[in-house]
Length: 208
Image (cartoon, rainbow, N blue to C red; front, top):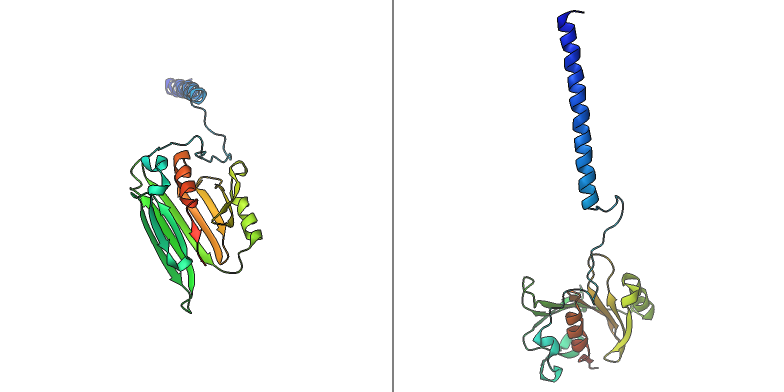
């Protein structure tokens, strides 16, 4: 065997051995990292939720204050009167159809900004229409975590509240009024924010 041929084979053997040991080292590293940082299995849905009783509490003076000292607001288009803490801003806007009849109304009850720990938002949309009935209200339960569902009465009308399933797990209340459906969403879904919303809803009054 010529020296050149021998040298080539020795070089190839060295490369194979080096590659083999490199794979062993990389494999050991992957095993070590995997054993210390468990990753979710592929194909497993990962939903990050903040259960009402476990999320950040963000307790505020408003949550503990006396609703009798709150400021009263009237939304004439839906004949609604309610009270909210004096440090909250209330705005509403009514959209109309092609015949200039009211079609949907949006309501915002807010304090602070999303960057602040004391931020609170109650967003509501009121939709006029005879198509909304008790069956539509019952069907609303399908979007909620079963353990969070509450059937209640708000301002004399049947209502259902609970926490939406999945990643956008807002607190939601649906009220079936005599003229349409009123859905209200609370952000973020904490125990303190739920308490504020429940207190606000308790002041709701619809006039004829």
